[in-house]
Length: 250
Image 1 (tube, rainbow, N blue to C red):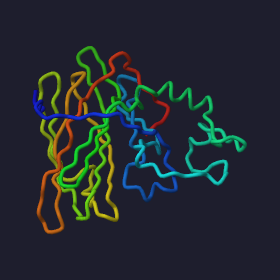
Image 2: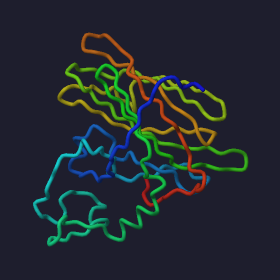
Image 3: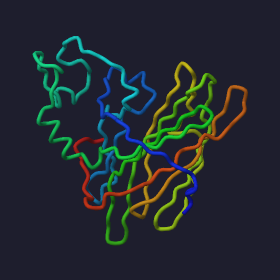
Image 4: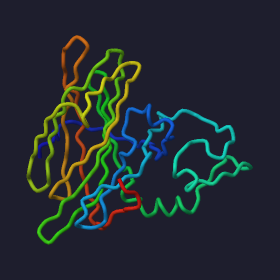
């Protein structure tokens, strides 16, 4: 097993919310606004499908907010389809049957089960993996996951992400090393003014489970570099259902 089994990992229950992103905020968010993706439900279809403007937010990151009473407090194409405005009730909004049906259909691909977090020299890395589905044929099966990475600078010193180094272990026995410049084509700067950056990516294995871990090479303003640890996380499949939702095309 390539993971360090001697290192103690402490776990606790954490509250996260599935949220809709106001489209007016999208130009100012340092994150992908179409990061929640699925596989198509046809075996020969390699397309990805996305739900635009959907994200996951930790309870401690939520700021209290009271709507001034407008029927559509945020701008999102799914808001009016999912929520009903009831001005005489508190809260003013209640879920529609459309939302309940959508959640029931897409629950396996939206469910958040594990959040992994580690801090190195004031840089906190949070990883959330999601199983996307599998491509099954007579000769092979390929299992897909997406993982959401959030980097946060908890200190005062500005740093820039320069390189990524991944180790990907498959239950089939293979160990892959991936190195590259930046992440998703960017080398984000984490400063006191803009301390956070978030992105999503995908990984596939020819086995129903595996592990990933690694480091980000960070550079300080004086040119010194250090490796920021990415917490190890498990890639687990849900093999009871290979179908995937395909309501939204990306």
